[in-house]
Length: 548
Image (cartoon, rainbow, N blue to C red; front, side, top):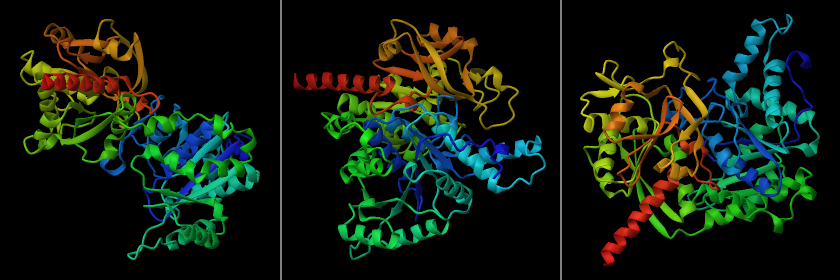
């Protein structure tokens, strides 16, 4: 195989765990892989991950949240699948765009090399050129780490996934047996008479084996733990040891999955199979912080209204998770009330009145913006704790310009190109941009925070580094007018406004960046913690008043 022509170095990397899925999509391959990684990290290993997405898009940046959930942004500006957010949260690591492999990215690279004449007249083919590029990307992402988890998106048998499974087959051929492990996640449904059915798993494994891949571990997704008889039957017909069949039943919270698979012994089996058992931290000495964090019973309960236009949780997954993290830190059960920005005049307006706090998230396009501004105004006028994120930050500026500064018709040029008061305008460097994908202000940027402000109190420091994803910003021509009316821009990046607040409000904070992308169960995002703590403080005051 002419690897010298494909930049492929088979010597990179260490231990590899490939995670595939069968029967149907959305089973939880990513959570299973991330949970395995969390346990391996607890055992003292340096773990990283790669997500393979077989779609033709180069990245997830142009995808509609209705189809694919939120677009997660990495520190280097990579716009990726939401599963990489789970890997960052579970493993508490910062990943890069190199940890996401897509068909569009791979084919574009190979075709660009062909156009440049780098293949010296060779016929460019799926094998070796595409498969070598896939393997190269995996190995380079894994370099320097003890273990690399690789999740293959989609379902075994999907036509777009075939080159990846072939690359994995080659990968297994090149590696020592103890350096590679195949985990296959399948559905184990119940029949009407309550029997756990193994036939879908059998067919899925048969499909995998027809490609030349034999799973080492099978994980059954079911409502409950797999019965011993079910495990034995799966082992018999799928040609794996019975102790290599594990349960991954439904749990109340995804952060309990590592606890569940740990109780099943999945981590110990993986380490034994990869020859790592002797190098692991003794079980009694391993970090138990994760279990303590996610199993602590809450002492308070609050309701927060999330005012958006995409009516599904996946579109705002990182916000939902950030609220959970803030709840872990404050021992609070945070209930999210969905408020449809398009239906504020209907029953959704009542949810604002029920809520203890309000979040207006990011988004694109004009739909729902008037409803979002109505929510901002409600929070401002009624002193309800408020957090505006990206577009929510911009909506807070527009609402203030209209209703406090008296700038009638104030808007964003994204929504109304000929607005008389463009308080939100396109970034200067965006004027000449033609391509939509990967061209926004993306990734981690530093913000300087003014002392004596709410933002300084929330972050506890003079600066913060958070991730961005936007084309528009506060128009510098209106900053003086907004601040003279009472709004304060407490966070700036040179001449760019990054954080706003209202000094006379209990908690009114807006961020041009997305703090939710850096929140972890082990270290919650400061703006979310500040929101929850303010609500808890208000609730204590209310309780005291009622008692008195």
